[in-house]
Image 1 (cartoon, rainbow, N blue to C red):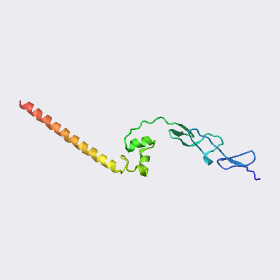
Image 2: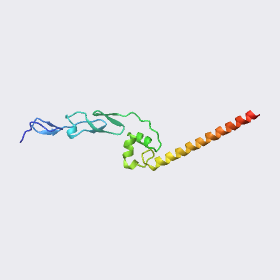
Image 3: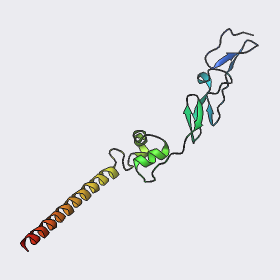
Amino acid sequence: KDMCVKCNAGFRLVDDGSCKANRCKCSNGIAASETQCTSDGATICARCNPGFRLNGVECEDTPPRLCCRAMTASCLACSSGMSIKKFCKQPKNAEVQGCPGSQATTTTTMATTTTTMAATTTTMATTTTTMATTTTTMAT
């Protein structure tokens, strides 16, 4: 039987001279394997379960996130725990309101512009009314 002198990354030399894969552990996630598991028995996480995040090599509780509930890119990205940019890059989210280029974003922008114009018209009408009132007061 051949005996090993040294093992590849992710493996360890055992008493019989063979190489065995390192086995890592991870609470609240998936343990690292192969070359990611640098030491047998070490706590090294490759990924975390929902509700946990990777902090170095361990999974820790994620504090509850306070996100809005609208069906917009910013609210949905927050709920998914990702940036708006990353959220919008996913093909299934391309048309979500707030993602660049979505029809919903264009419609919302146009509606906002219309609302702003209506508000300006209302302000102008109020100014005209105020001026008319002032003129009447001065004539009396």
